[in-house]
Length: 412
Image (tube, rainbow, N blue to C red; front, side, top):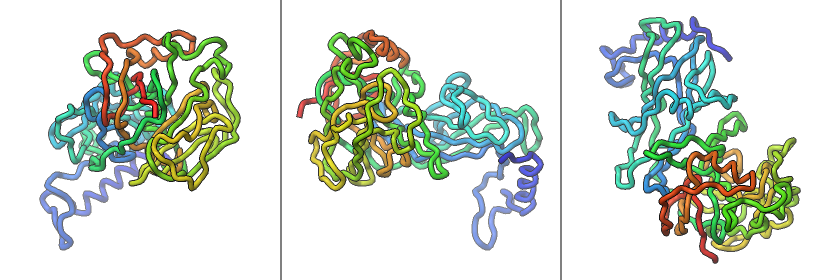
C-alpha cells in the first residue's frame, strides 16, 4: 500500500507536537529518548536476522546478514552509500556500483541504488573481520541518501541516517563433519562469497540472495547453503551428454550424516530431473526434492536436498551417527544438474527458516576456482573451470568453506 507524502508528514507533525524533544526528554514514566533530537527518516528498516560470526577459509571472520529498507515517501530515494558501524568505527562501506551490486528492490533482479515510492529493498551484507579482531556486540547502518523533491526542514535534499540497529549474536556456529567423502568437491553458490584480488567482495551468490516469502514473512533459509558438485580429474563437471545423469561421475555418491541426531523429515519418491533444464511447475514442498532434515541440537537443523530417487536410507525418528550413509547424490526437485544442496537452518522447514552458519571440523582445501564466480559457467559447457593461481593446498580446521573452494573430505 502506497503512503502519500501528506499522510507521512502529518504523522511526523503529530509526533513533534506531542512535546518529545531533546530539551524535554522525560515524563513521569521516565526517559522517552536519549539526548538526540528525533529525526524524520525517508527510510525505515530492520535486519532479517541478527548475524552470527563465522570463521572462513580466507582467514577472516564473517558476519553475513540482510538489511530490509522501506521507502515511506511518495518520491524516489537514491542511496549514495551505506556504512556498517561498530559505534563510530566503520567496518564496511558500500557506495556507487558496489552498493548497487548488493541491493535489490523486492521482486526485481536488477542491481540498484534507487528505491521507488513505497518500495522495499534488501541490502545483502558481509562484514569481514580480521581473524584476531574483536567481534562487535552491536551494529548500526549509516545510510547517505538524496531526494529528488526535498521537503526541508524534515526531508532535505541530502541526508545521512542511522537505521536498522542489530545485536551480533553471541552463539557459536555448530561444528560438524562434511556431508560427503573424497576429493574435488566444489562449493558452488556458497557463503561467504569469494574475494577479488585486493580483497573486494565478488558479489552475492544465488543462495545468498534467495529470500522466501512464506506465511507473511521473508526467510533467508539458504544464507549459508552449499551446492556440492564433484570435479573430474581433468577439472570438468561431466563427460559426454550433458542431459544424461550417468555423464556425471558423482551421481549416486554417498551422502553422510554430519553429526549425531534424529531424523525429523524424510522424503523419497520424487523423480529425477533432466540435467541442463530448469524444472517448472513444482509445488512448494517439492523444491528440495527428495530430502532429509536432521535435528543437530541447540536449534540447528541440517538439510540434505535433491537426493537420488529411491536412495533415502532413513526414516523419521531414526537417530543418526556422524558419518552414517543416509542417501545418495541425485537431481530431484528444483535442480538442473546432479548435486547435493546442504545447509543448516533455524527450523525443520527447508524454506520457512533462517540459514545458520556452520564450520567443518576438518578438511583439506585443495584449490579454488578463480574469480569471478561466473567462471563456474564453463563447467556446464563441459570444460574445466580455471583455478586460482598460487593457492597452496592446506589442511583446514573449524572453518566454513567459501564459495568456489575445491576440497577433499576424508573417507569415513
